[in-house]
Length: 310
Image 1 (cartoon, rainbow, N blue to C red):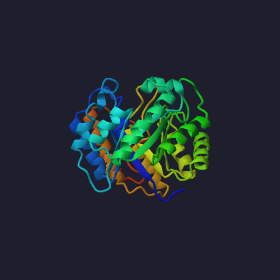
Image 2 (tube, helix red, strand yellow):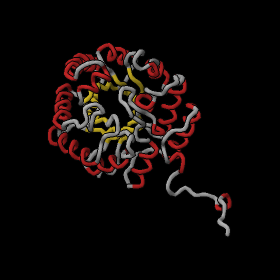
Image 3 (cartoon, one colour):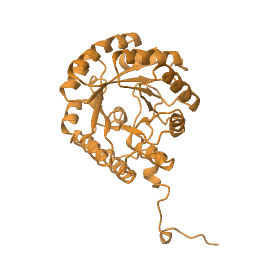
């Protein structure tokens, strides 16, 4: 297991993309700033996709403009095509994330293109990024299973990963879009990618749809993963996948890692405070558990707890 890991906060993008009410741009900026105060440095800050498809993220440029940039901070954004990449570069995004689904049917729902059409279009994005010196990352959605097709062959995940590697990406993310990952699948896919792409870091992005999120994180750690994506409060869910619920919760993930002796460089108390604050912003409870119960060794006043009688 690694002694330390990097956590990428995806709440501002993946966490909010399907939230039913528009979240004010100022609140999105404040969320990133508060999380940065807690020690987070790598964010998936927004997405330069069609505002008709994902209206929640129509303010991507304003969010990037408003965040207080700090030393070591990286604001990544999703880009589906060359136009999105050019807009993101103009908005001073620190990295571009290309994304494609490992299953054909989900890619058609998600971006209305066949997989190979998406992969071919990435060549233009890669060329634009190289010309401006902007790093590229590659995400693979439904990497552990598809809500329409069921099992996804590991060979397809490897094929897409090879394509990304040929384009010069600096990291590949395996996305568990609808919470279909299991420890067995995590080990299998990590082993396959380590065999095929030895030098390329792999990040793991789990959803907690079936309550398996942290179990899969543990499997990923044992397989050598040192990069994980999560969302504050457990926000999230893909709007183009039935049954998708929130991402692995950032504060729950940090609590787990710290209890396992894995360093994150993050302030758990500040993350809990931020999750509770953002619940107030949204006007709704979030699914994260540690923000409700507190850390394992949080103390309570015995005088404030009823004593059994009879």
